[in-house]
Length: 411
View: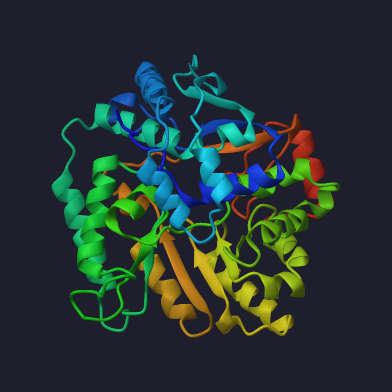
């Protein structure tokens, strides 16, 4: 059994779910699975087409996932988080995922179709554990004797790069649950990082200064290892608001205002790439610049994105040194160091590293996603600064969305 706790997911699933409970309890949604890897011969152990071979295993793991409920200690931990409200924890005490809302189907091409359809409140927690299940099932079948020594060697190199002189203030976070090689490897990586880099709660052993592991998006490991859980909102939240607000053009503004209504200034990091950077900046006015603590980058050129954010803050007479820019798009440690050196002192910085931390053993990772494609029967979409990340099965809606937000090209 791969997933043994409903806490084995990203924090932003709970922060969004709480907003759904309080503001959108009747919303109906649909999610679709996509593997972005190009098709290759399954014998290589690198192909998305190999996934169809493991449909029964994946279904069995999902069935086990749907048998879980929150334990008392888990609910107590969630209740201890300052931004989690007591009525939401009470709801989670009654919550279970329902298998009737998810289907896994092999395709003639050899790929798999995963569709999640049902009430948003009762389906939102499927995404991260299902992606982790698909990854672990794939790799335990294609890499039955994984090269853990190679993984440890690569992790050692990352740690040494982060401990270089002059980088003591550079902090990273783990964002790697959905594409991890395995749950066991994920935990090993976090234990090694915590021990050798130090955490927000304990200094780094090498230099005695504040630790360089800021925390993890994974709530289970945050609880288990004493790490800080990190996360705010994901793309699905802003996508759903395309169908939940009164006017499509105002959906991004509606999403941010609804978030502020729920959290009253807490969890103030805005996701910037659901409609591209230019559309984001048009809506992210002086009010939001002051209200939100910063913004998160997740597609497009991170250097150009950050320069535009800094210029935008200056233009709105807001000191960017009081704001946080979070980078989370396919980061590696060398790229993180480049970004840190470029923007150190100009703003607050945070870095979330995913696949490159939790699935770097020498094998090609699966680039799997599960994205919301409908809400209340209406198409919803993300128009990314990286067009390959766009996901919508209604081209007419995509064209309309581009027209409404005046999007002619990425950014």
